[in-house]
Image (tube, rainbow over all chains, first blue to last red; front, side):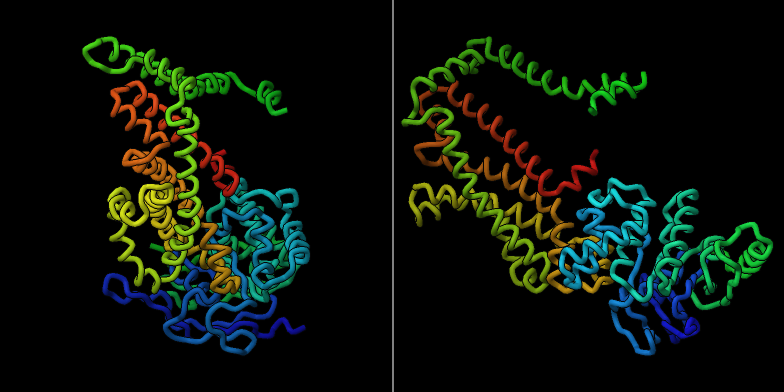
Length: 253
Length: 273
């Protein structure tokens, strides 16, 4: 097994912005490694740093300092091997479910019949068969995120970034979607980097949890979670880890 | 099918709600009736010289029998509409293309934007003297002036729609490695379609207004010509009749455009359901 192989590496990443003529540090000297096929959760309080780190990995913004390596090679800007599930406004409202999911292959120039086939496979995988012709505005929040996940998978990325994908969902839907993501991840093993501020969600999903500090973000601790899946949220070990991480988490302001 | 379901599943509250919603169908009719009553009242005094509904109706019957310049009422309306349609076709084609160009390309906007903004301030009818000097008073100059009037709203709205695409949508393109052309055709243009349609709506009503004004300044056909004809011969019922036609046609044009938008942007229609 090469599951210990390093897939993605962040080296001394820093990011800052100028806000009202003052330098605002969003992330300071973040270094971490993401292993091949693992489910890594970036856990942090508030809204600081996590999304920014993800955006830098995705190539949506450039770090002020530091380097990002994918399979040992430095990457600059967006890379086809990296896919992303966004927090909100994830879907293009002018495209149907099918058209949204086939977007990646279409951009790559995959012929229509072939990309429809790929898209259908992932629409089925996320359980949305029958909704291919629906527009996003006709779907519920949970269904929209399913489409978003299917779209990311349909592009066949090696690394999948998920930016608090369930933050806007109600608790019930959220639990269901966490189970779904786990099921999909087990069916289609990819490296996943999942951002959340919810400790329980992190513990439920992660192989490893990278705990980030409050602003500016830096790596506070890394936890290996070796609990068997699917995880039992009232298992004593689960609760112990939950308390340990909770005690170590900065308060969000 | 659907109707049956509604009958079965409607609760008492929903039934009342439906009844209450019926008022939205009644109110417009009420307004028209009130307007006509007001019209009767205003014209009942002979001193007001306001053409009465009856006289307008009689004028309508008369024009059916005796055409003006070989054209009946419908003929004149169609003459005006034809000018608008030709002008609109060119205005949409050119306006949307130009709007996309200056909305998408910052350099093009820097180069052409200021000139365009200055031209925008010139009312279409201000072009009449120059256009008449160049092209006389035939069909083409009228269409040209309508084109000028219809072009502006399309360009402005298209440019705004393309330049203000939500960053979130552009991020999707970046993540999926779309090239510049794909960014434009797959993301920017579709997401700007409602803005473009706002431009199309405005240009249609602007075009319809400008054509009438252009016809009033010279011509032998069209609804605008009828108004001038009525004014010159003291035939005020004809003026009022023409004005009513203008209003009705304007209303119908708006409905056609709305229908067009439903077909071209089905997602916006589904959203409102």
